[in-house]
Image 1 (cartoon, rainbow, N blue to C red):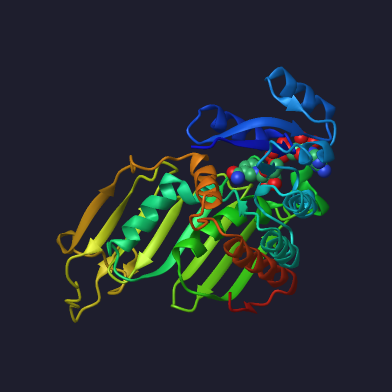
Image 2: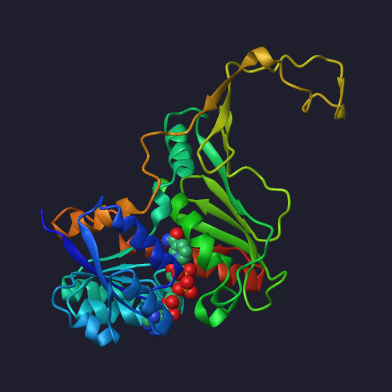
Length: 353
Ligand SMILES: NC(=O)c1ccc[n+]([C@@H]2O[C@H](COP(=O)([O-])OP(=O)(O)OC[C@H]3O[C@@H](n4cnc5c(N)ncnc54)[C@H](O)[C@@H]3O)[C@@H](O)[C@H]2O)c1
């Protein structure tokens, strides 16, 4: 089996993570060298035993390099990806692939024109928490799902630097929103019809440092996605409502529980009940014998790291269908664009993607 040679443009912290994954040797891809505009990153690469190219042109002219990882800040992804594709390289680009859907459409056109693969590092499709949510819903454990809540929350603000700068593609929609939207769109094979979003700039005036996003799909499913950098009491990672039950995934390891009804408990007494919530029939507690509770354990068969992203790229180079398609990233990009517009105008945006 051929081993593919990788060159990296933008050797920052995420690129370092790719290096660590590749050094494990689980995929037939080896890192040959890097280019970065920051000299200290080139020095580091040399110390680690890799080639430090003096320019991106020198890297792209290296005939031994098969694949380019674009891992710069977001505003350079488009130009670098196009240049690499035109130099005959396959490209894996960090997320978000671009900052507009028009830019991503251009990359897709160039990738087709050059006959080279372009894929995006949507590595969170392979996370245990998400896989357990998807599997459990697919098994019918909560009946037909009608609302999925997906949240990632911190309270420490955002790291200083480009993430706080709009022109560099900072903000939480491009940082985390892109992952959470990708997950929900990937599992829901139905077009998004409505997008409503409220973005906040609580501590970083230039970008969205928190947001709430509400999506409606043509098949009736709805999803609420929340990213916070200023929440001191966190919610569960996922919460899903179905016609027959409720599911919670508490944490990143995918653990949680499902509560499913065994039968309807609609023996409404003629008299109103006095319960903790006050005098109410509707909100009186259910008889516990009318539900089952199933604990969800960590899925042990899920490789929760970056390897599959390279695996699917190599498989596609060798003729298989690409699993992380740029057209899927384009759907996500269109939803993010609608989210920005919704937050700006205060309106719900209709679309069909
Ligand atoms: N998939 C994931 O889970 C994940 C996680 C973190 C970051 N990311 C993505 O990775 C990318 C980089 O993020 P990071 O956290 O590593 O940022 P970083 O600031 O640590 O690294 C960016 C690097 O790119 C270099 N750079 C900038 N412009 C360049 C250019 N024109 N040519 C060459 N080098 C250039 C910088 O000098 C820096 O070393 C972003 O797109 C980010 O969204 C993805």
